[in-house]
Length: 170
Image (cartoon, rainbow, N blue to C red; front, side, top):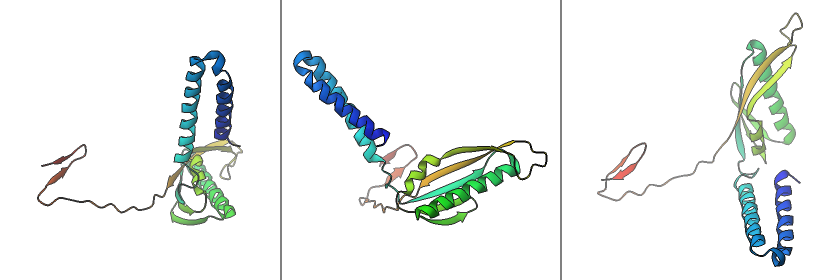
């Protein structure tokens, strides 16, 4: 049971407990029940909006950050790790560019939590004296949104001017 389900369950319990107190507390209990139900509806709506199966394909980009050659090695290690993870999950992956991969598969949108800067501290292969280096790499996971056709219906004899902030009919 994940955190969201636990929170919804906790709210259900509080609502049930408060309903038992309506006869004793009256309006105060009714207000509390309505407040708890609003909280619960916000949580359930939020869960529906962004489901793990929302997107079937993502673009994953890994770029080296601070750390010179070691950062490049770290970025390639990260990318290799994500490709192996995708392979183990049965997802299809395709290299689009250096450090950019398209990954298709069921529940692939869960990779969205990997977005951010990843840091490693280690004695790199390139270090001769055994010093610890800190390197970073940025990871960006973008959903691949399906193409949706848009149809514009213009009335004959009407001229439209479209600007960045407004659309006016003349």
